[in-house]
Image (cartoon, rainbow, N blue to C red; front, top):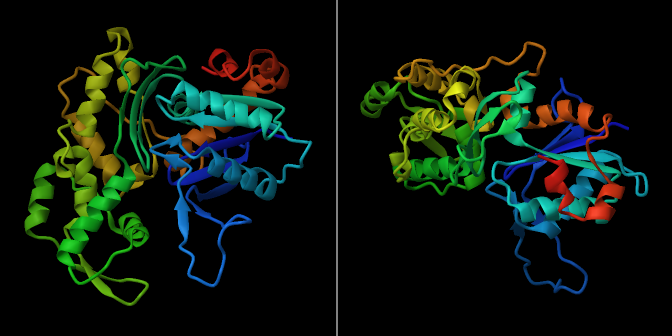
Length: 361
């Protein structure tokens, strides 16, 4: 049985048996509905539905919920049998706390009885997915943005940077702008998320964005409840906020300047290979016009080597930017488990959860 690869994000959990040139078999929302347990009040009165977020800003926060979610994924969806559990590889977000890594490996061996475990950082895995071991990833996730330089398969943690903003903050920004232009409409945040995915785009540059603010064609959209809303310049502010964070009320440099500054803090002998191998990942980077705007701003950088984006291999699926960490994990799983580089049950029993820091790096 092939190893299972799990990439658990704030919005989506991706899982499947390791197949490097395919999309993950399972992509489901990470958010869960809480079900009443035995002994809890369940009389005729209205019961409020409680939503639970096992993963917040990229890190596991609710371990009970995560255990339930993984049980559903591994046994119900992927067909594991109790007593015959296989090997599993998890993707680690940048700057994952040691305590989270230890608790995850403990959960896997003590609750799920896995036969083998491995974890690797998402930045490294996203590079593997495009056939690189060195480069710099710009990962715009649902709850965070990670920019991580990687040299010879090792994340340069001192230079890396994590931002506590992500797709959810852009969704909230869009909700504010839409409510301002459509004051009589009550927007559900899940519906705004869909509107963002359908309409959001990037202006060609800052000048074009400013022109759009003065003149932008209107478009009407009918919500599921029949209400009709108007969308115009709001659709461009989502992408612009990544290049002008002041739109979100943040005193930060835009994403391209952040990238260049981060790379410049790495040893100069690595600058060229980092700048020439930029990988964009995360659902937000697939926004219409984002890649072109990113490259255009990169071309204006004063550095002698211009940042350039890596084109995905032709044999990889179209959704590579959204699923690159999972796909890189599938590639790595084909190496670490057959070559016995993973954590075994015997390793765990001998050393305990801290073994994850010695064998997974």
